[in-house]
Image (cartoon, rainbow, N blue to C red; front, side, top):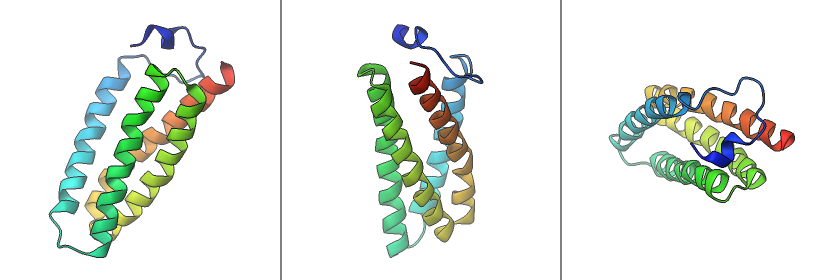
Amino acid sequence: MNLWYNTLQKPPLTPPASYFPMAWGILYSLMTIAFFIILSKPHSQDKYIAVNLFLFQLILNFTWSYVFFEMKSIRLALLDVIFLLIILFLTIIYFFKISKLAGILLIPYLLQVIFALYLNFGITILN
């Protein structure tokens, strides 16, 4: 974990650093399964939108880590996670249209992004 991160004031319920690799490993596995379910479905306009939304939210997901830890821009990271939450919500809607299972598999990820929003917002306020 980044030494800079250790110096930040954090909100209540902030988990230990060991939580994140385990949680994200599980979440990325569920995301991969959901994505492959969608890819296996017949071509449609909904599938095209779902795949593009998924890829866009994935870019926002990866961007957050860079913005927060490398750029050390807490506020810009907060903006990123807000956009991520919006795009992820739309992704889940389209996944559900195509496959209920694929949509359900993204629910833990949605909950984690909501939690990340809470943590990022708390760090923004406290620092």
